[in-house]
Length: 365
Image (cartoon, rainbow, N blue to C red; front, side, top):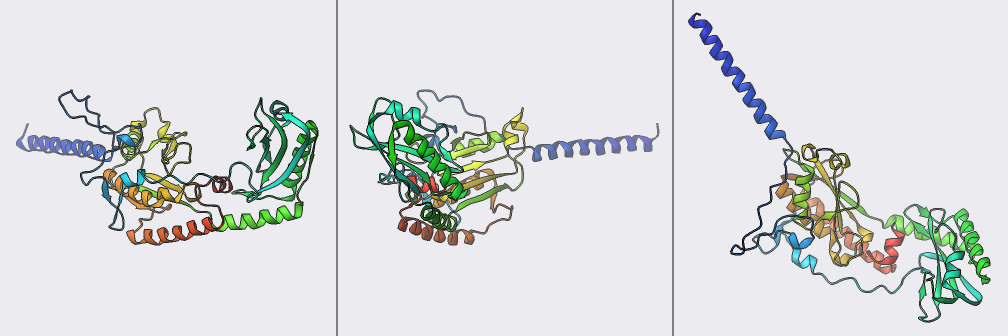
């Protein structure tokens, strides 16, 4: 074999090695980021170390600056303060309310048991696309409530919601409300006084117009700058700042301060990636951060927390904040949104439909 042939073989081997090495490096570089492995439990002599997990805010890792992380506008929001904010004041209203419901008072000929009232209730609790309900005035507590077995009632009230995100109450839905209520009234032997249909439909249109003009649902995208993320990587980083698993695959929520209330924020990513047979091999290029303004009380400071969450996740996961179309957002675009939200909160307050209240949650649903 000549020297030239040996040189060609060596050169070919070197080229092959370079190609293999480049492919391996490219594959590693473009592979979805995976969650960091958890460390073994600390020994009694070692200080306790918190690891990321879906056990609530208590597992969040607070930075060395006492919980203050940089935000988009150069200021900071203290997560500890946000989580210790005062809870919203107790609701003045509960159940049916003349502000957002068309209501019909019902008077029974005699005391009616809760069991009989429940048996007389219509099979569905909707009139068209609007919630329908019947409440009774408890003889013992003198409180309005849905009929309860074992209790007794003489007065009732039926109501149908005037508007929701589907639209305002129309004549057909009002007629269905009348039929359902009349059936209940006949079953318990009572009398009912229905409101005027045209008046209630006009109220519904006005309320729907107000709701349409003051409804705000904000969604931002956090997009990976370089390597994609695996579902576990997203979950681990989200858990560190208080997110917990939602009811649906690919959905995480930041719980409200008071149990039972809607979440402050939601984080969503590709459902198919979450349901994959091998989720850690699934590549996620972006996640969505959403805030339903009317569902969350302003004392939670939800928009400030959204900005803080976006900043923390962007820094930890090497992502950039974008609009829903994937266009990067400069920091200056966030301040006008915060100002507009304060104006929106004030308008909802003036209408007695404060964001996060029971009535606002019903109206904007």
